[in-house]
Length: 397
Figure 1 (cartoon, rainbow, N blue to C red):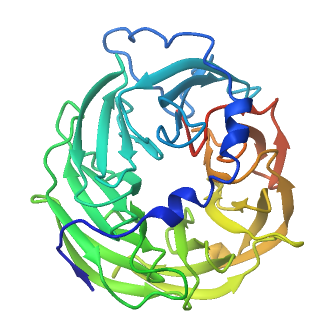
Figure 2 (figure 1 turned 180 degrees about the vertical axis):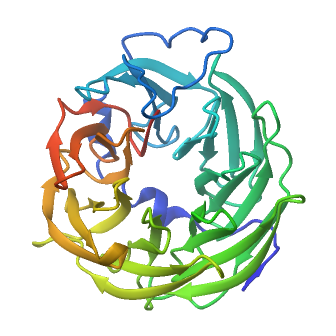
């Protein structure tokens, strides 16, 4: 069960597991060639997928500002939605160690974790790139955040202290003081996991349940959120096999199955999901497609909007595994792997229309892009890798 406690804990494993080639990133990453774009016109908003908009689209890049070869803030860029070509546009400074990014459903506010011992979450107004302020997460090393579909709450996961936090979001997009903090305490960790390490905190497709993936305790916690007070109530737990190290959970569009990337034992698992209770049933571990004499750490799964294919980022094997999704979401069939064209793909993301896949490659300091064939499950390289210091997150809008 979880407890409401203070800060503490260790968080070095997650952050520095990908720091092996920091010196290479210094050589590969040039300074931005252009300043950030100016403020957007009054009333401007981010266009929604499929709204017929064309031209360059914004891309935001996460990094570690305190790591060797790291960036100086949130990277600013744009991409061509047809070719996938990325063009740099400078850096938004003033946000320390912004290793994970998310955007508000209305497209007006960007949120970043400050992945430090004294963890925080920062809000940035996108219209004029103004930092709206930072709030403490109450824990160490926050590594993931997401916005509740209502747009009223920000959810964050503190890796170092194994806790999850809730912050209210105001009408301006700015964050209020934390309304809840729950620290995971059980069950005992497997070898090398050292204690609770919350790695993801997200809302299930039903909108009524929140799921927190804890790498250190081999557990996915299910919570209910009091939408008035911003308080969490735990309603259940799902456990992987000991030592799996669950990292990231992605749902099938049907809402009754999810796919769990296990970092420590190098597997992926299909889970059944019950929207009525919010509980997961964890299936049998499957191959990530990583072969040869290499240590591999699967990072994240993406599922195409039509629910027919899934892609998994493999750090170490440096590939994207391709899966066919069968039986209405209940089964994954490995189709093969595609080289990611970078080193240590920490995070992957689709463009809003799902036609492009972006991979943030931490050790090579690059972002690579692929054209996605959602009908056949194919991935095709789109242009040359884009240099970005210690690239750990790519958020295309």
